[in-house]
Length: 176
Image (cartoon, rainbow, N blue to C red; front, side, top):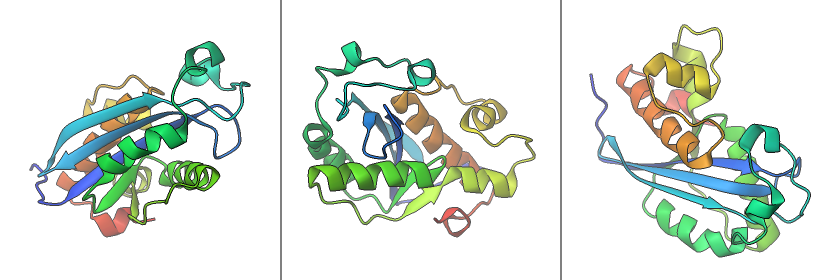
């Protein structure tokens, strides 16, 4: 069964350069329209500090990020990508929602009021896996993943959402 819907959702994934919620250093967005992924957006983001942690996870370094646009400069593209979305999706939505809120607050951007759905929550409810982390769920569904690349992670989240919906998991069961 293939999930089909007329609504538009956008999956979001951030990579961060530090423990601070406003330390976004990459963002990925994936749009779902009429039951399929229709577009993906990815951008590096110049973090607020030159101290970049977690390079061993996401592979990003200060030399790669120092000339990237700031969150405030990327925000208009993100906001346009969100246009018409009824939901924002994330795998571990509490993290990405917190980064989005903190980054908006730090830069004076108006935080979207679009409700979040969490594919991690949906996976925990419905999948017979020991681990529900993004890479495990992608492996289970056969979804390609370049893990910790924000664009790939966002697209994978969107595809997981479609798979979960096709299994009968409702938006209400993934609501944050």
